[in-house]
Image (tube, rainbow, N blue to C red; front, side, top):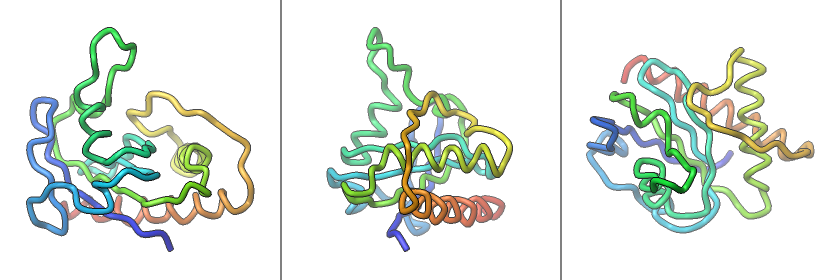
Length: 155
């Protein structure tokens, strides 16, 4: 079992208006606030998976860059930020040994293979050869996504 946090984000006019953690308005909480490897998934209030990402920065820094891309950099930011509504942000705390880019790609593949489509707002993904341990970890995280996705119906 991998530790993870689930935040509810309220997006209005392309910005995070409110963040909720454990049903309370909150900022991101540790270890989300610390640098270190993290994988994250964004699911809308209808249960649609929008994005799988990874970062080694604090979650606030990663969200800031995804919501406020610098013009001329070639990076366009999160596609899903343009759709107002409620989103679940599932964040797993990883170790450097997890090869998070490989696990990220495996989760995206599982979504495509099992649910029939790529995540709705996935901009790109880099695929790497994976080993059995990485595939097993990806399965666990995929199951976490499905569990949280089901909760969206009561969002």
